[in-house]
Length: 267
Image 1 (tube, one colour):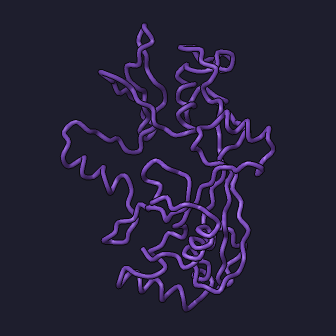
Image 2 (image 1 turned 30 degrees about the vertical axis):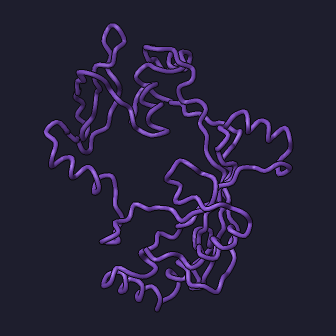
Image 3 (image 1 turned 135 degrees about the vertical axis):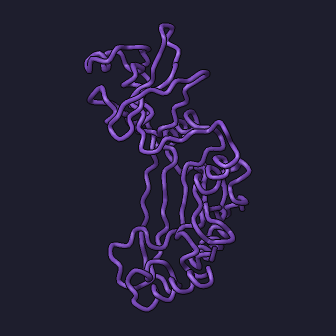
């Protein structure tokens, strides 16, 4: 894709500030600065997904993979020994069961996975009993310890071309669309954020007690802060001008959230 002009200036600035080059953050090292990889096909310049990159090929070559669309898992089924034997699902309102010979793997995301566990009877006993859910396993940690980053970014006008002008400029957007459709080039080949940097807190940067808590709770090589070069995310309105946002995120939040349920159903 076309490198964002703003990102090239950010790269120079962070290099002068002492951020080492991180080579795409693909080798396990998160500290430093780098352009990042994206799920964009290098030949078509179109966005790729797990479906288009892997799933379609797997469906063509595999004889033991079945995918059910418009289907929602309602709960996990268990035998008398509390071994998962399958799931109850709903397809267009019709409930039916899918059995498992070996195991049931939950991969429903940060919200749906704990929800599915709890409606299936796995979670804090007191809460499950309040909703009339038979308790399979009293696990108080289900739905607990949810963590998320805190992110903000000041926005300033700049004199280099950015995505923020596309939505407000009657000449630039049609030109960019035509350039992308005909040549697969130009601003629209860039997703708008292509440059990241990660930094570990340095001595004196934080209170000693805060730094000690971070060091105790996170791995030694885990970054405290991340920086993302953006060019239109925090623009309050599209006026056809060029803007730049340097986003900063706290990667070591102390606050913790919870995911709970208020019914015995996943609907």
